[in-house]
Image 1 (cartoon, rainbow, N blue to C red):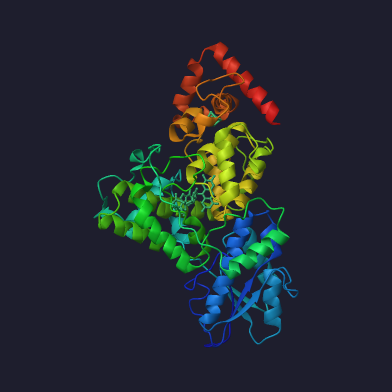
Image 2 (image 1 turned 45 degrees about the vertical axis):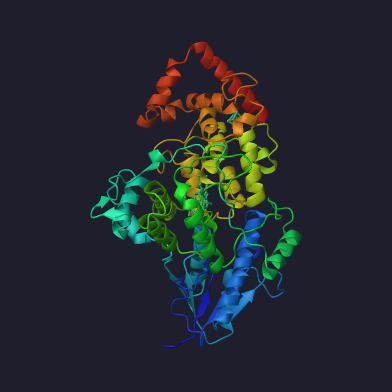
Length: 511
Ligand SMILES: Cc1cc2nc3c(=O)[nH]c(=O)nc-3n(C[C@H](O)[C@H](O)[C@H](O)COP(=O)(O)OP(=O)(O)OC[C@H]3O[C@@H](n4cnc5c(N)ncnc54)[C@H](O)[C@@H]3O)c2cc1C
Ligand code: SF4
């Protein structure tokens, strides 16, 4: 029926006027529903900055919708009539009006998808129309088709396919410059003299300050610090962050993409994931802005290709895999890792300076860049054999950009190899030498990165070999691990025993 009123549900990470649920919304008929739910804030105890970011961005978005003439029913966390459930709120409205039809964009988490499906089954008298989330650049069906007939799903081939589809950095059928991937140029440590520009931060306005007070009051026992809250909470903020990245950081993004420096997680990264994941910034807008910088000569190809690969390649790839492999994926534990998460992941009380710094950055900003997440925090969890469920929960709650569709494949597949190599072709395991090469962490560490065994040796060194020993039957056959195992076998028996002993002592103390 034309012009029949519709209820439009907008979830907290769908803050975009062009989202599929709102695209045909009619301000004169339709009602938009937005809910702050206690259960969403606490199903894992999210970092306080993440709570402020999402709640404040939701409130700003609702304000914008009202200014555009829409009727909005907005339930705050502390509203007395807030039932605490999306479906109960939908039902309340549908049962008390002429409207029988609710439109929403599909949720980003399997858990919520199931909730809505179950409600629809129980309530055939209403229609819940769930539309595809076309903020993503690869639709579910397209991704499924791409996977068909492939023995292995590898990001690199998906990325090339996406580049061709979107004609990005292409010269006819070939990549501009002749190479698809310029990562080999992007592995430079940051010289001491190099001073990255300050990141764009946004001082809290009245709405954000109100939410900060609310979060301090209701969620004071959650992880994280609120003092340095400076995330943007509107699409205009996100655009400003994008413009500043393109102007000031993109030219060196590639060169220093893998570098780490004590006390500075921002470096030349974009800090845009929070905005893209919330809906405040369109991923293609970020990609096109980087491409334009290359075309105008203001950023080199290694930077622009590297940045585009992260969004067009990795981001879309992990999202495709999440929906392909849920709900069984989180239950996989290929390496049978079962050690509890060490307490220092919460309070940063460890002598390992690299871990201490990355955890402090995370606590202070709800942010750490990719290599900190992968090669320090993640590498340690892999080498120490920490239970994937505990590691997943930690990553899901500590980062402001974390939602299960992106967190789970990165943690379960990329860092923990819990899927036995379905996502990554080999475990990202490394000793202290890698961290020493890419950072200045080791210069102020109580451990010696050059020592291999004993109480002063860098724990990453003996844990690396112990990891290989422990998992020999599971990893030896992997051709990409052949060199590592050849090196292990060449090791003198005495040193091999000493390495294992050092690792065992360390792990016992950890327990
Ligand atoms: C263990 C682990 C957990 C992670 N958890 C998350 C998460 O919960 N949420 C999240 O958005 N990203 C996650 N990532 C990916 C990546 O670390 C972050 O996207 C990035 O650090 C965000 O900072 P940035 O915006 O400055 O990124 P930049 O370094 O500037 O990269 C540009 C953009 O590329 C995208 N991107 C880059 N790498 C990835 C990736 N591996 N997967 C998906 N998108 C990517 C992001 O949108 C990012 O904004 C995780 C990576 C690892 C190794
Ligand atoms: S010596 Fe080892 S533990 Fe210490 S900072 Fe370097 S890599 Fe980390």
